[in-house]
Amino acid sequence: MGAGHNEEKFKAAILLRSESKIWAEAKSEWELHLVYDDPSERACECGHQPIIQICVIRNKDNSNEAEVGNVCVHRFMKLASQRVLSVLKRIRWDLKKSLNPAALDLFARRGVISTEEKDDYLDYWRKRTNLTDEQKNQKNDINIRVIKYADEEAARLIANFAKNGLKPRL
Ligand SMILES: [Zn+2]
Image (cartoon, rainbow, N blue to C red; front, side, top):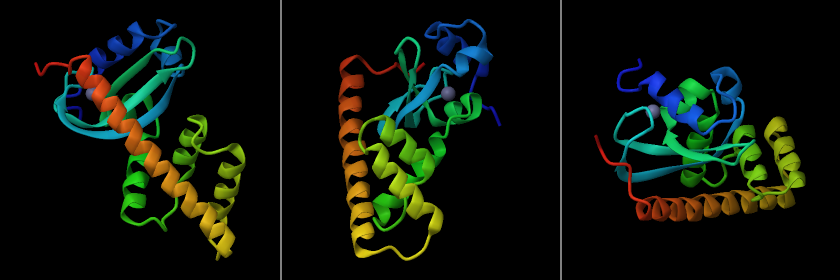
């Protein structure tokens, strides 16, 4: 493990955009903003390339953003990026599958679903019992909305990143 993912380089890049200069504190300033796949070849802040699974992270204190690889976000920042990426993949494959708490939390923060909808969904997720038709429809509607948002945001972010110049391969 660790091959190609330079931890010091990654942390230095994130610290530059953080308020605190102490890693343990700086790390907690960041939250997961979005995850998406980008087939163009990019490099992570750690120097690893190419990265396909992109994580947008956002600093809660100063609103700075960074787009980095999933491996580093998961490994060095302990954010639930992998859980969100894999559940989106599962739902794309089968709309009847369920979003997990990590994904529900992220999309509620992004305003894609309301707090009420998140609470209802968490209820369905916990019980795993038979849902009424009305509940099934609500869940289906939320799944469709989340996928649509994730796709549109991904397209926007990829276009934006290309416009600003892709991080050159080293
Ligand atoms: Zn990395």
